[in-house]
Structures are given as C-alpha cells and as structure tokens.
Image: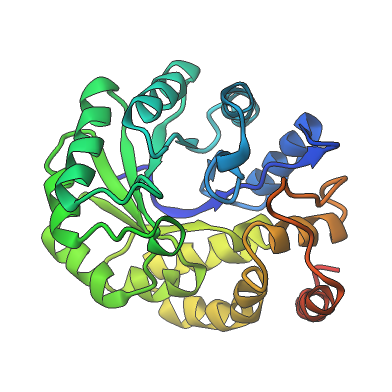
Amino acid sequence: MSKFRGAFVAIVTPFIDGKVDEKGLTDLIEFQIENGTNGIVPCGTTGESATMTHEEHHLVVELTIKTVNGRVPVLAGTGSNSTDESIKLTRHAKEAGADGALLITPYYNKPSQEGLYQHFKAVAEAVDIPIILYNVPSRTSINMLPETVARCAAIKNIVGIKEATGSLNQISEVIRLCPDDFSVLSGDDFTCMPQVAVGGAGVISVTSNVAPKDMATMMDAALAGDFDTARKLHYKLFPLMQAMFIDTNPVPAKTTLHLMGKITSSAPRLPLYQMNETTLEKMKKVIAEYGLI
C-alpha cells in the first residue's frame, strides 16, 4: 500500500519580520502529528515556496524532516518553472531524507503536454525519489491532461498526483487511466471526500493546517469505506474549507493559526498581503462557529 494516503497537510511557513520562524514551524509540525495528520508537505504553494530563497527552501525542508523524525512521511515541495531548478531542489530533498517530492506543473511559461511530460521525465530520471505530480491550473495557467498523467505514471518513480482541478470528471479519468497503485490525492479540500469514493487516496490539504484532526478522521473514514462518518465530517468542515479560500491561500490559514495562538505572526510575504477588515470579520465568524477561536 502506498505511503501517500490519507490527509497530508500543505503546511504554512510562518515568518517573523520576514524571516522563517523556525520554532513556529516546529510547533506547527508537532500540532499536526499530535492530531493524526498522515503526512507533512513543506514548501508547497501554501508554504509560499514561490517567494523563498533556495537557502530558506533547504532550511524548511531539512527542519521539517528533522522534526518529523520518521513519524509520518514528508513530501517536500520541489517544483519550479525551470526543469534544472526542479532537479536541484528535488536532489536536495532526497539528500535531506524526504520520503517523496511534490512537483508542481511549470507555471507562467505554459509548456505543451509534451513539454510537461519531458519536464517530469527529466526530473524523475535525474533523482531516484518517489515523485508526486501537482496539477493546479488556477495557479499555473496550465492543465496537465489525464493522458499526460498516464504517460508520466509509466515512469517507475512517479507514484501519484495532487489533482487540484476541482473536477471529478478529470479526477475519474486520471484514476481510470493510471495504474491501481498510483496515488491520486485531492488538491481541493472540498473534493477530497468524494474523490476517495471514486478511487482517490487522500488529500494534500490547506484546511488541515487549522483542523488536522477532523480532516484526518474524515479521510481515514472515507478510505475505510465508512462514508456516513466521512460525509458528516465533510459537511461539518465545508464552511471552514470555504473560509480558507476567502482570500488568497495561505493568507486565511495563517491568519486563523495566528488567531488560534499557534503562530506568532500571520504575515505572508509580499506580494501577498493581510486580508482586509471586512473579509477578516467574515472569516472570524466561521472559525468561531467551528470552535477554533
């Protein structure tokens, strides 16, 4: 059975005065593991990898692996819109001891489907580590089609995909075309429960940052076929899932963690910015009703 199953958290990177808050990150990881999260994903979109230096990227990956200490899998975000840079970041993740690497489709430069295949093939051939692809058209402006995913799945160390189109049609086609042991993980919290029903393996979640126990319990129940429990948790979590995207991710998650007393500063890095008062009040209402504050 794949180690990439259940609720993985796309963990935020806390900053204080623009620098990585190492104690804050360590505390967040402990909070996640204590609450049953199945895996930690540092340096993803939610971790603000796009505005990190390579030194910071290395620090966050290494600190996560050291803190986790083998208790759950660590899937390090190592993607870039440069294949050479992706190889370097993936090589570092392997050397640091990550269990796998999460590679986003190259953003901004809009490669063709063949370009996407060649990009992932080059990384997979250069670094012998389990690779999870990451398809998120809303952030990258490119959609990796199911046929391309299936081509990539034929490469031995490409073992899964974080599928964040929000389309059960596309998700179903990916699952249909790929091998049975290929882990299809939801990249949208609101689709993760129904995705398991059609053969998905779990989620890489933003909402897990603030409600790790409920997200993990929902995924465990769904994967065990207990859809009554999973459905109840889905509808309990649903307003919170929506609130986590009331502003650009990870601004709501960081703000909520700060309000929960889990991190010292909620500040994202520019060009991301704190949410305005009107939006903040709407979000506060949801997280208060959920019982987080």
